[in-house]
Length: 571
Image (cartoon, rainbow, N blue to C red; front, side):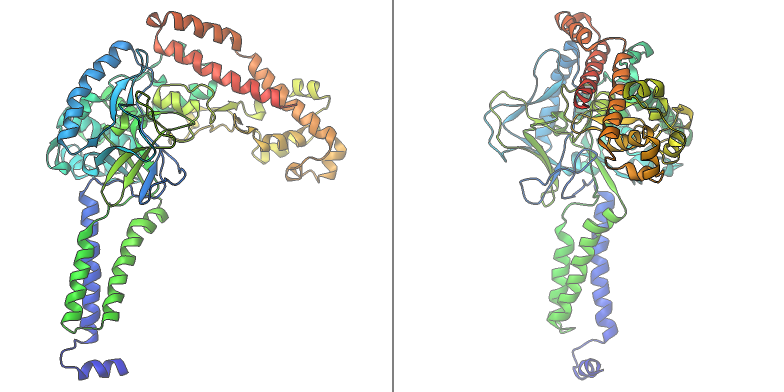
């Protein structure tokens, strides 16, 4: 009331309605500018901690979004690698012409059997930035809904929702194929031609989706065979969905083209939990100008103007850092040149980061730096060999993040387990475990989900190289082979077997688990020694061996070594 009277007595003051209206206008104008900027610019995710499909530790550089990286397929024929290396000459020239800055690094091949990578042309110290790429030259998709006016106008004009609601890898495949086969001009990057970048990308991938059934069987690993079958089904269904929604898409992009785009997206994109535009000074400059006018004309006090400015800043923070996380928005980005970097599970010497204020991406050296001629590896995140082989086309030896998925407990040979541990499975145990969901379920590809990211849908028993057997499995086996007295003391409740109930029960449970793993290892068509000898033969005749033959043996050998290690620990 007093405030109103004071304002009315001042001839140069506005009414409260005008004052708050101007504050509202100031806020709306600022956020409108930011929203337009986010909607029409190809902007990356400016999260503080982002990696390839997961979070990583914060980067050592302030105001950067730590990103685990992008990759190229590791296994490649000598002729394929040589052909791509020649095409990179035009690509690197294109990069220089379009403000991609790089120094101390070059695209090269380590040897005749490896793909391309990034190699240091000089000694690099920690935090040396070797590549900087403007955001406008990247390809990006927001999930779960992506709005891309270029794709919608040129390929899905009659049904834009078909593109908007596509999985991220399918939407990126559409973008890749559009610039590769329809129109190379990037309207969002001032009409830059994307052709040199597109031509530098791999054309053939040595991933299991292309393998014959005989090669898949050579993996000797059912979970991978089922994962590839699911992948084939989902990718085909997604292409059919897009084709039925748009005749333009169907006439310009074949299924093989679509698969190429999906594989390129899966092997080269990185992601983050936050999705928003980069720093834009225009809204803040506008706020400053309006505050000056607001105070200068005597419309209100400095404190009131500060409140309005604070409202704008808070709105920006909510939009850029809070709402996307609450809405679980993901951003997937493919970044030229940086996507040449290859993966190492442990000991990465490169770090990809988003520069919020510079509106671009950078690649910098990590501790301890690099010597001249060495490859700058970056880490995709904690990827096991199932993921690396299925989507990237290579296997990492002694992968610290690898897993082995045993069949679910319901498929185990109970008789053999009873004989090994010297106990019998009493009545009611299996039924209780089944109700608790600890027995898993039967494999049925027709009932599997439509999410290609789902792994181990049948509830198989998971072993990890880092920690061994899943503790829930030990709990289940304690209950399964418990004596009648132990079962009664636990109140016939599975939850009461979460901890050791007796030394005898613990020994029997671990013996049963060990036996199940031994049965699994013995079921393989070849032994660890035979696979090692076969790889030695392949190495001596590498020119005559197909990539899928080498990869299948490498993969199954790593799985057997992991399984044997878990057996040795289960004493």
